[in-house]
Length: 325
Image (cartoon, rainbow, N blue to C red):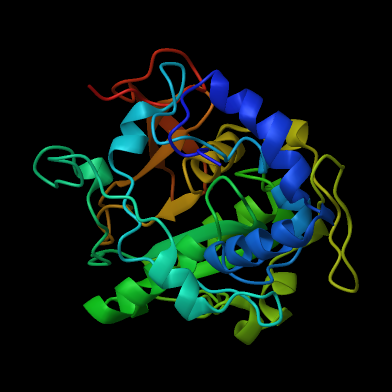
């Protein structure tokens, strides 16, 4: 099937008319589909909690030809590079990992792509962080797969900066949809780390989920949310679900939401100057308005005051993806 080479709109017709009958969908796979699902499972981080819940709404959306079309993110396609990926597949599916890696078609980036000088957004991450960094990530995020957390942990360890990285897995399906409880806890823990040296607890993200287990995410999940459903209680650790409206009544709570929603929900430790009398600033990204907020922290009461709002370059409309030319 020439799926990869077929441009849109013919690609979409090929997916609905040929691909889906051959492969099936999450929860209703054919034999071929089970092989495909196994490979995707390992690419996305292993048997992560709520994996199929998170994959269902993204299953078709994540399928793209080499040229995604003028209405899609062509700049991302230019930088795609699968040459160094080691694919894996579960045993008993009629295909072994060695054959898969030898015969799978590889994708190379366009000339000049992945260049730190030309566009650092798409350059390889180095893991050379210089300030405390905390990340929040849904386990079943199939827009930004959880495997990226595992990969970044390995890069930080290799760069000797693992002590500056704390990662938290939230047992939810979706992308950047954390509730107020998770955001406020993470932000408070980050401030304590920056100002008092109290290193927060995190989730072990260095291995695929098959080996790292399920104990981690429940610790930082006060409510469990399936794709397309409201959060429900998550066991003995259950905390009251905080509706989004409640989290936005005070300026500092709005900052929690805006910062956690940005991109892969990184809570970056960019608080400046810890000496007495020095001002403390927080830089957060708002994924809905596509702006960077600069806020000043009142150390006495914890309030955050907006100092400046700066639009993210390349954004054509709020909530859209940047278009770099």
